[in-house]
Amino acid sequence: MQVLLANPRGFCAGVNMAVDSLELTLEKFGSPVYVFHEIVHNKYVVETFRQKGAIFVDDLSEVPHGATLMFSAHGVSPEIRNAAKARNLTAIDATCPLVTKVHLEAIKYAREGYTIFLIGHEGHDEVIGTMGEAPHAMILVETVEDVDKLDVPDDGKYAYLTQTTLSVDDANRIIARLRARFPNLVNPPKEDICYATQNRQEAVRILAQAVDVCLVLGSQNSSNSQRLCELATESGVRAYLIDGPEDIDPNWFTSTDRVLVTAGASAPETVVEQVLDWLVERFQATVEVRTTREENVHFPLPKILRALSQSGQTP
Image (cartoon, rainbow, N blue to C red; front, side):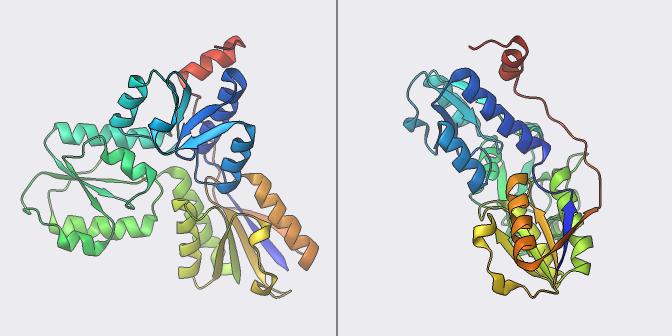
């Protein structure tokens, strides 16, 4: 068996920042540290932090007054920020800067009187947080068909934003339909789908041409990981989204298959290595790294954590 290991893969700069932030918060503040929603959408990461003393909540009423709270990488609405203040929580914001960018764009367009079409998936943490910035001005659009069903005048002031972890191809199809219906549609000068999402999709699109099977490391609730699996399937490859080697069925493979291994932006490298070990042990696989693009992006820790890290002190 020949394994092609995609590069880039796995943690993006936003996930690295969020994971490092929670590690440092637990170290400096001590447990428990409460986290609003999962810090990132990955089963392995969440369980690891749970064992270290992180408590993941979906309602701030579960957080005691005065406790330490971290906002996840997906961002939160102003309503959640205000509720945290009301409970006198020490709030540490680990929102990915690329998500913050979309929030700021939503505020700007709403202030200027635009109706905003947010292209994204209903119920996703990022979408909930973004729509909370201007709920009166935003309409969620999930599919091309949704565009045709929009009950708004065609001559209004419209802008679009996107969830950062979408399929580039799917988003472009929806944007094209929006532009066809709303010729005066405006958008931010720089697109919202994040660099890491695009780079990982590009790698799968290129490398899937040379393989029979694709394993995507990532959890079922990870939007960007789901998109990688869908993209491989669209390329005619048998594709499986797995959390780790325990999810693999040996019957997915023959001993002569060529297998692409990649990982969504919230999947840790440790589980990638476990999957490679599994393939080597059972199929005597050889592993070849295939690099389609270099990544050198880094996001700083939240300000409060930078100060603590540099001082070496505890709060």
